[in-house]
Image (cartoon, rainbow, N blue to C red):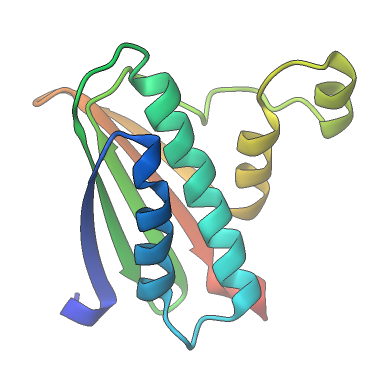
Length: 143
């Protein structure tokens, strides 16, 4: 893959780093990416990375998160690697928005929304232990 079609960004598992992550993602997507697409992708990555930081590291522990961004001919691909607690969002049954709203439960809306916008793949890594979460946005969705 060409260097301008792929970028890796490493940041701390700290919510304060989210504004920098958003800036890096917007910069990578560039001017040719439609604003609507850019907004959707930034929303999804923000939601997923927030969940990784908040739930993957319940005890304060300094760690790094690796975000690999790829611009492919038919898709935008984002790979998030972390060393937090294992969680496979692909196995979580998504309730409907109405069920989430009526239950008043904290959480669920973000992940459900991400699943509507992007394809999600998860893999638990064994050596070294960690998580690999892949989010794919089809460029055909913009056509």
